Image (cartoon, rainbow, N blue to C red; front, side, top):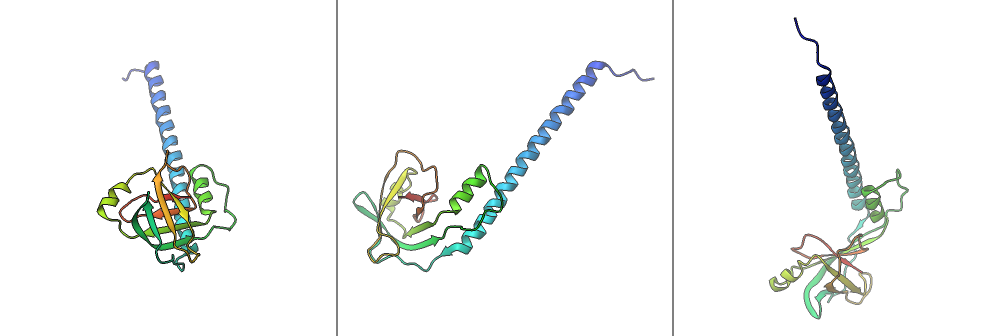
Amino acid sequence: MSAPAKPESSGTRNIIIGAVVVVLLGVGYCATKVASVARTAVSAAKGIQARMDTTHHVASGSAVFLGDAKVADIVKVVVIHADTSAPASAAHGVDSAIQAALRQETVVYSTSAPASTDASQLGDLLLIGHIESTYDANAPVKITLSRGTSAASALAPIQLMVAGRRQPISVY
């Protein structure tokens, strides 16, 4: 013969079941958000590929300067035209930030490998750039780098990719 269940063990069991349900709901919500961001990123990558224009060239003599010292030549420019299509759905949070970045034209300049003495100075995450001239002009492009006071919070319309550096430098 078995003894009847004690009321306090039933209450503990209900609390445990409730905690497990809450955890599973939280995991499900997080998985849904991660899947949404992943879908947006994949869609964005495909869209960027379709709008990428590599036909432009910078004028001879285009270079990047750190203060007054030339650190690298600009060797390539890629223009990513703005996404003018209507968004499939209203987005929030990270998804909306990605969509907003895609709605602006972005120009990406790439440099040759800087000298080893300059490469260490270009690792500073707070570097920002100031640009003179543009890729579609006959005058050489000059990007002068300086140290900013804070990291950029939004994607700048012009980015500088320095060989050997992971993050692009925002240029204004």
